[in-house]
Image (cartoon, rainbow, N blue to C red; front, side, top):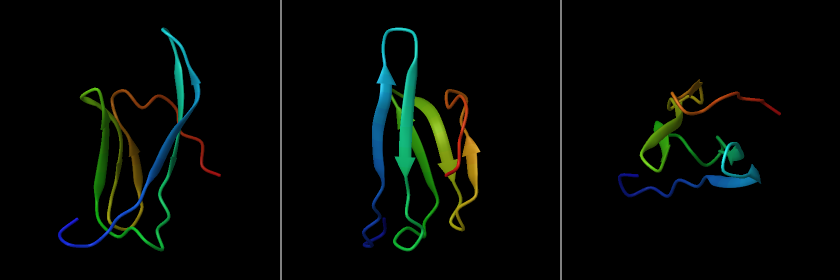
Length: 65
């Protein structure tokens, strides 16, 4: 992002034709820019620069751990 490296990790816990459970890891020690995650053009989640998370239209539920 603008010359800085930002790192996120997205992986699935569950995937079939009707349901998907994704896990997004965004370590704020290394990520300081706003970010929106789209999968197949669908808004999953947005993060502000300070780490506030908003679930997108297709994001479903969010569990913070």
